[in-house]
Image 1 (cartoon, rainbow, N blue to C red):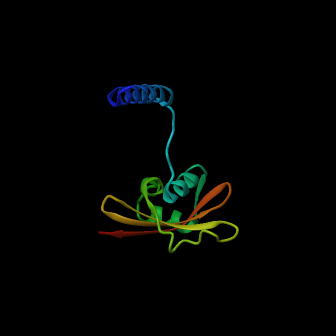
Image 2 (cartoon, rainbow, N blue to C red):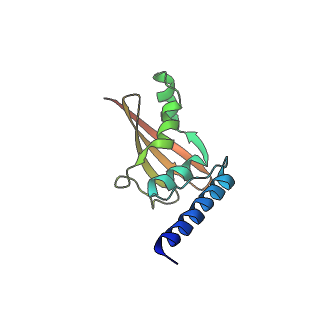
Image 3 (cartoon, helix red, strand yellow):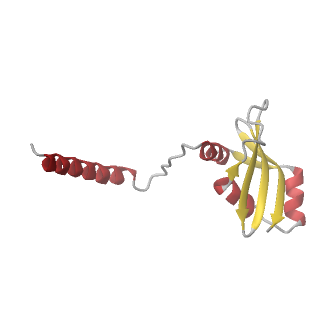
Length: 125
């Protein structure tokens, strides 16, 4: 068998596999969260999210809504150097993100069944 035939068979099988895979995964909520940021954010977003009194008062005083917080919880970056991931009983994470030219920093306490947003800091850019 010549090299060009081997490459042809390989590409044919590979393309059929991709088509079958796309058919089975079409419409399903599959994701590839392999990085540490993505895994922690996915874990936080699957839990019930509770706002602390300080965050509730900030949202009511500044006429803001929770859209900023939800966006940062989905697309933000975790600052692991400032986070206390091994804190007992719940890990504390610092999540940073940008929304409408504002730098938003959240302090989230990630427990087994709930995630509590303890602090929010918004800086205009």
